[in-house]
Length: 100
Image 1 (spheres, one colour):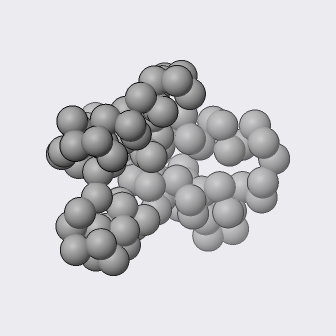
Image 2 (cartoon, helix red, strand yellow):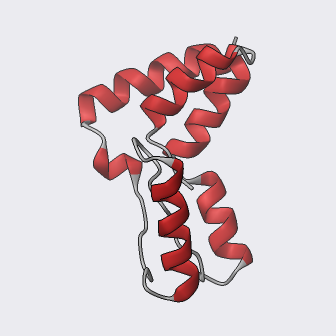
């Protein structure tokens, strides 16, 4: 389950975890750390679901579609999706928090 990193940042900061931990989690999401780990662990048999702006019911339905074979490929590459300048500014902001 993959949320848009910008929305993940806002959500995590609203929950109150240490900003450093939140920044590390968002940076991991941007560069697909957990996705790659899952892909490696399951020999590429993974399906990524973009949960951004989706309800719980929509996410559950997408999971059911994935398990039943109706959704077979859905890789998410935030580096390709996010705007270059905005992405760089966002990463620089996150790095400040991650390194503090």
